[in-house]
Every structure is written in C-alpha cells, then in structure tokens.
Image 1 (cartoon, helix red, strand yellow):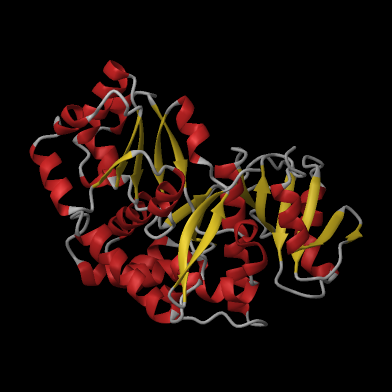
Image 2 (spheres, one colour):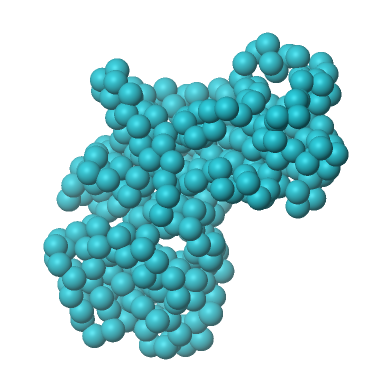
Length: 392
C-alpha cells in the first residue's frame, strides 16, 4: 500500500507523515475533486506529491480576485506543458467549474479541485462536469499513517487533525478550530443568519454524536424550530463536519429501525464542542473510542474499498455499532475485560445467520472466541481491516 506525505508541526519542527491516499495515480486517469474538512492535510498532500504542478490557491486574495473577475484567465495562462492543474478551495469560486469543464473537454487537461465544503460547489454546478471528475475524500490521520507515533489516549483527547495531534497546546488549537469553522465555513458562506442559535445547536448536535438523533429534543434544547434543526444538520454534512451512518435493515427475526446515526468527523472536535475531556475508564472515553473506530472504518471505505457502512438496531433495543458491507458486524467496547453481557447484541444478530463475522473490538490484550463472537484487540482489528482481511 503506497502512502503519500502530509506535514504537521511538533515543537516548531516539521513532521512528515505518509498518507494512504495516493493522488498521482488517480490523476493519471481522470480529474478529481478532493474534499475534506479544514486542516486534514489537503494542501500539504498536494505540495509534497505534486511539486511541479500549476496550483491556483483561492485562499490567495490576488488569485481569487483575478479569477473571479476573469475565469477565462486560467485558459490564457495554461501552457502545452500543463497536463494537470490544481485548484485549491474550489468552493470559494464555483463559477470556475464552467472553465474547468471546457479545458477538460477541449485540451484534455486533468484537474484536481480541493474543497472543505460541498455546499457552494453543488449549488454552483458541480453536475456540469457530468462524470468528468471523480470524488475522493481526505480524512484526519489514521493509526496506520501515524505508525509508532500513534497513541490511543492522545488520539481520543486531541483528535487526529495533523496540526492538533502534534500541537503543544491542543486545547487552545481545538477551541480555535471550532471558532474558525463557524467563521469561515458558516458565516462566510452565508449559510445561516442567526449565529448564536447555530452555536447553541452545534453543541447540542455534538452531544448527539454517535446516536439516533431526537430532532424534537434538539429543537427544544437549542431553542430553534424543528425545520431549522434539519437544515442545520444538512449544513454540518455539507461542510463535511458530520457523517451520516444509515441503518442496516436486512434482519428478519427482529424488526430493524430505519433512522440514521450521526458521527462528527473527528473525536477531538466533537469532545471540544461537548465541553468534555475524554479520560480512560469513563463513559465519555468509550464514546470517543467508538467515534475513533468509526473514523478508521470511514477512511478504509474511502481510501481502499468502497462498500456500505451501516449500523443495526432492532425495535426491541438490540444494537450493533457497525456493519461492514453485508458480511461483518462490529461492536466496540472500550474495556479490558469483555463479559458475556457485552456481546449479547452480537449474539442476537448472529441468530439471523446472514453475516459472516461477529467481532467485538476491545482493549483486551489478546484475541479469543465466545461461540460465534470473536473478541479482538483494536490494534489487531485495524491491522486486519487495512490488510483486507474483512473484505467479504
């Protein structure tokens, strides 16, 4: 598995981290959109792997102004040697997509277009490219990317955004990040008018992380209309802060629920919005551990193998955290000693005789089996996941 590098800082020194997502081979074949929340490392990945490529950074005021006044300027500046062009933060100027479309068709130029929000791009005509560009996502760091630098408690308390994971003041940086998100992604896009109301909602939404959301309760707690809550959740998804996890509905013996669950993209950002510090042995640590495992599963899905990721909950209250495809059930427990009670939901699902594997991912030191359920250390689970052992 080839990995490319990104940059973080630690005590002022550059730390180069190889990323799993390998852009050049993808761009040899077709143009791509690369989406990811701010500070996941999109720009660093481009700088380290595509050094000779023409880059238009739309956060640069002079470049933004020049192209907003004359989008055709790109065509005027392109040379016969420019087979690949990068447009960084494309959501700031969706009108450029018309020019991109023309250059892809007329000059066979390939583009990499990055963005931290899909909202304006979708409104600005992303469909105009009509399949001429594929989509990839860049997430915060994974255990495999960090290697020996990975520490579970550090990851759960700081999150896995590169600059914050290596920060000498992660609490301050996380507070700044959430404020920057409100300022640059919400206010700057004009997505909402009532900033205080959205700020209240954002904290309530974070407290719903990893759960089936009661929209009426969120509406009451945040003091906003229920219809507005739905709109706010869509904004969080559009700006890549929130992921929706659909329900798995193929069980027959026990009627499944249809409602989705929602997870924040980074455990550190979620905990900061909640006002919590995730200390080992607490329920909050267990919730953070589940969010972290969801992050790893999302990365594997987006980087390696695109297959459905869901969860299962019966109307009688049995719930399994994650279902990979239609073959592997995963229950997450931040415990060093798994009891029979901890795996009863997996055993209930196993009665359906649909899935191939039933895994309890835990903090136990060694793998063992209880009936059809395999209790597996999280490190071993992740190694097997990324090695493709759970691919069918």
